[in-house]
Image (cartoon, rainbow, N blue to C red):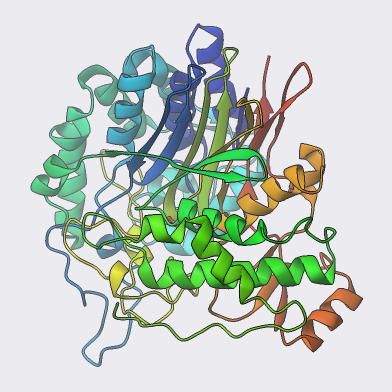
Length: 523
Ligand code: DON
């Protein structure tokens, strides 16, 4: 089964499974297909994280996050008066060195069973022969006209000045060429070959700073997944350079001290989760960064003892305040897809260009969009980024450094050690809370996966000190009571974009995000 935000990409994964590939082969096929059919977040010009659990008990995580270019500087996004500019979000300076091609290839070579050319075949076909645009695809591009219209991708995305109409066939010949080069020559085509040359040429034309040297030096990193437990379940989550795993583990370790958790949707449930989120996000925002550059207190933050002291600080009747932390001491889109195969191998992958359609910069000749991942750094420690995250020095810009992520591809095992859930999300910092809430809905509130995915979500990230909740997701009485306890609440539109698979009697149940688009395809 494959669940992603693009039905065509899910079908690409299924094609590979049916041809005898395993979950990793299918995940990589889905990833490349997303780069064609879901250009707002699917990519070869961005990066991501993949969490793998093989049926034989091996667990692995690969970090193919972008890195800051060698010519990046700490204050590159500040103007002469020290104010933040929008250059970390739009245009060539926003681009981190892409990791997607290297990461997917590395995962394939170690855990897959097929060649790059085999798993890339569906993506190449979709780019070359085109696919039929649906209304979501068309609407997404129409909404991105201000951004994409500034760069050369406008010639492809707005043929005749308009986004492709629903029902029309959309082809990407330049992208097809790049994909074929990668399929034929391997990652070298991207990092030290023709595709990379187009990228560097685009940088030179538009005033970006990524060089051939940056591309040649890029390496994905194998990481040890964070293994934690929650009431008899085992979780495998993503370690730094993502904050996803530590923040989820710390939150769940705090919540374990409150058994059973209060009912879903209640004042007490919302209060307890908020108080746990507040504490884990405070640690995240202050202490986490690329482990190659800063010392990350992973063991402490994920320890049960530490969570106990935090749980003891929670007042059941009153909101606490987010402490000010030592800053010296993350219209948006990402996409998550979940894959399982018949043998029980499981893969959870999250990938992104950061904002929808990334920096807007499109590589002429290469046919693909580049990320604006540089905004995930604390461009000015102490000042909020695009997601309102206030982060510290640990996540300041340095050449070659990975910007801290919230991506949280997660695999949950049941008490028998079998894969129960494969999940993860898009949505900046809400990735962490939404993924965790879907997991809690299943294992604490005993919801079906369909209910767990539809259930209203809320979010708190330490600062701003506000509970963001889906409009009508909390009743008026609950909102009132929480306000009286000292919380500040803000109603919002749909929170996060989750794609999940769950083991059910006799097979698997896949559910794509009910608030968005996608496809859950199995056989
Ligand atoms: O790595 C991160 O945490 C962000 N770049 C993710 C961005 C995101 O999820 C935007 N999506 N909806």
